[in-house]
Length: 106
Image (cartoon, rainbow, N blue to C red; front, side, top):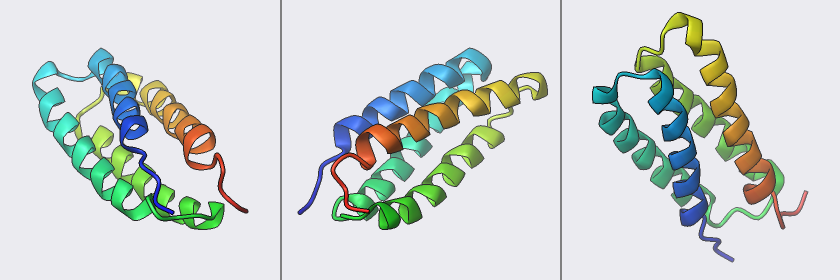
């Protein structure tokens, strides 16, 4: 049974974007937003038919790495990178726990 995570992925993208707005050059935000949307669509296509937590975790880890690579290439100042990374990871793992894992089998 296919699940549609479109709304939730959009909300995650908005949350990540809000964090990035605090620390990144405003001229880079549109490019970052486009990349996050593109990789979120690809992730959505991978997970919409997944029914187990194990398979969801396998799909989620590369998605996290990709999003964090985008963040790293944006040039977040060194003194702000660690807290920015932590905020974004918190959002992503909250999304995994509350949205992706809800209703899945072990």
